[in-house]
Length: 195
Image 1 (tube, rainbow, N blue to C red):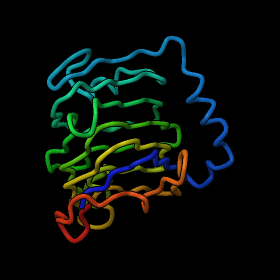
Image 2: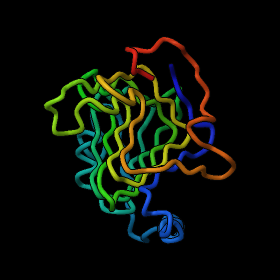
Image 3: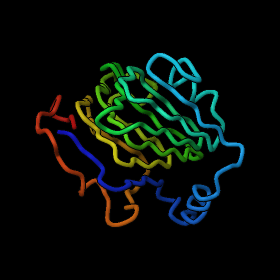
C-alpha cells in the first residue's frame, strides 16, 4: 500500500499541543543566516544527505535535486526542511536496510516535503536505532511534518511499515489532513505490516 499526504501531516508529541504557537512562530520567522544546501545523488554541497544533516544548522534547508538517493537519513534534535523536487522525480530509499528516515528528539522540528520515501525495512529486534518499527519513517518523540510525500514499499517486523511515531498525536495542517485522509495507491504490502 502506498500512502500520500494530500495536505500537511503534522506530528506533535502529546505535551507539545500547548506550545503549538511557538512552533508556528518558529516556522514563520526563519533565521536570516539560514543556508540552503543543494544536493544531488552522490554529491552537491555535501557528499550525502546524512552529511548535510550533520553539517546543517537549525533553520537550514536541504534541497534535493531530482534523482534516486539510496541512503537512510537520521535527524536528531534539529530544525530542518528537507525538500525534494516532487514525488515523481525525487526518491529517498532505505535500501531495505533499516529505516529510510528516522526523526528523533523533542527539539526536532523537521519538515519533509515533495519526495517519495521507500524501501525502508525495520526488522532487527536488537537494533538500537528503532528496531522493528517504522520502516519508511520512524518518529521518536519528534515534531515533524510530511507534506506531499509518498510513502511506499516499506516493511517492518512489527508496527508501522510505512510510518511509526511514538508519543505523538496526529494533527491536521490546513484543512483536515490526517493519515486517514491519505490515499492508498497500491495495495501490495511488503509484509503483513507493510505500507
